[in-house]
Amino acid sequence: MATSNDLKNGMVLNIEGQLWSVIEFQHVKPGKGPAFVRSKLRNVLSGKVVDKTFNAGVKVETANVDRRDMQYLYNDGSGYVFMDTTNYDQITVPSETVGDAANFMLENQMATVALHEGNPLYVELPASVVLEITYTEPGLQGDRSTGGTKPATLETGYQIQVPLFIENNTRVKVDTRTGDYLGRVSE
Image 1 (cartoon, one colour):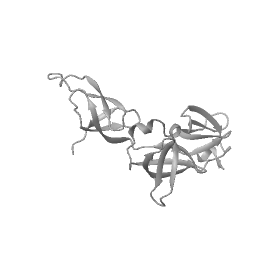
Image 2 (spheres, helix red, strand yellow):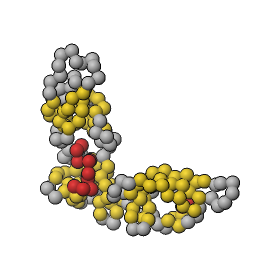
Image 3 (cartoon, one colour):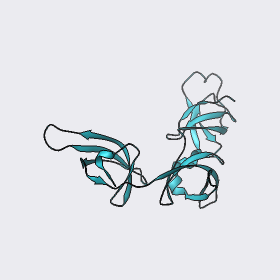
Image 4 (cartoon, one colour):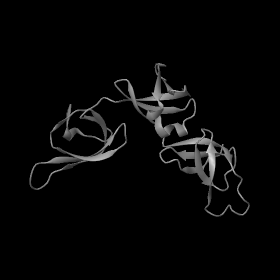
């Protein structure tokens, strides 16, 4: 248990049986009336964001969330298997929990897995990853200076939009939060 005065960004609260992560908070001391804490919370499982106000000093229940760096091994059909690199324990994370992160995960890649009481809550990848383009249509000569884009398939099977000058087997940097092309990577 903690009080509303102890809130910090990234802290996970257990409110009415649901886990909420603190995105931002602000202590407010109005000229009249008692102080309070205005916060923005994100539901850990659904991603829904809500605003919540706590009176100053009110007790809030914190949840113990264990964030571990794990190595993605393979997809076994029912989920994604990750290995804790410190003790070599393996866990299977369901596809629904991994979500869109699966579009950017390669075997043996490191990721952060958040666990609450042994249950995986979410998988967090680095802000950007380097992947190879396996297929894209050739760009037309003369189209290179315009700002046009074309679809390209990554080695994970996910499709993104890339500039016209990108060719097959080019390594590119991709934003894992939005799926946007960030640039070419030279070897």
